[in-house]
Image 1 (cartoon, rainbow, N blue to C red):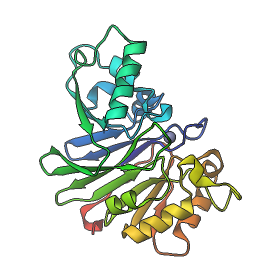
Image 2: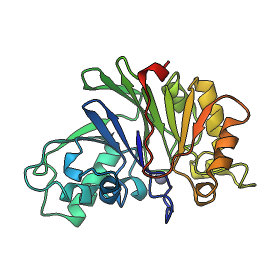
Image 3: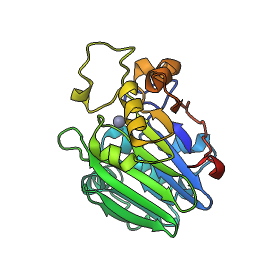
Image 4: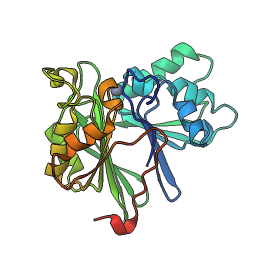
Length: 263
Ligand SMILES: [Zn+2]
């Protein structure tokens, strides 16, 4: 897993908007397409035209606004780009493209849409790789999906962002080798905030969720301005004295899950 961006919607400086690249053998999937996704890919020597699969959790700008530019970089006989998202996100991505580049339609740019329901669903992505998705609590009008990739004879990863701790995410993550979860807030650094109002989580809540789901490893992403600068505080808050392996990656960092480390 390469963490292309680890910040939230207000990212400036140290951390860019949340984006990940998951690679396993010949398979890869890009997660999220925020405003600077093409540059984020470039920083790790990937070109937009090389991306074969994209998952977008929801339509908020920090997760979706770079999509038209990603497509623009795919002119000239691109290979298929498989896009996985719920109906509302698919509509938003198409609308963005229609408004800013009406001269190119997504069929011409060889986009293959995989519209996912907001109910729990399972999709065979390619032989040996399964994608499971579920809707999670989200702000009004912005349905949001959490996702899990299971690799036959390999690790499983669960990705949850822009939501507060909830049972749907807990069930999805159960037994995952790695949970990548947003920690937009910190109970240590920010007092007296009703975090759930913002449909976001604290590092403490996410550590608790990882332990309840039986996930041995947790990566904290979508960090807010306060937590961004104090990753050690976030890690300790999530660990809460347990043996949970918590990482707070920097942009550009790669985490390798080796088979022998996988439960
Ligand atoms: Zn966000």
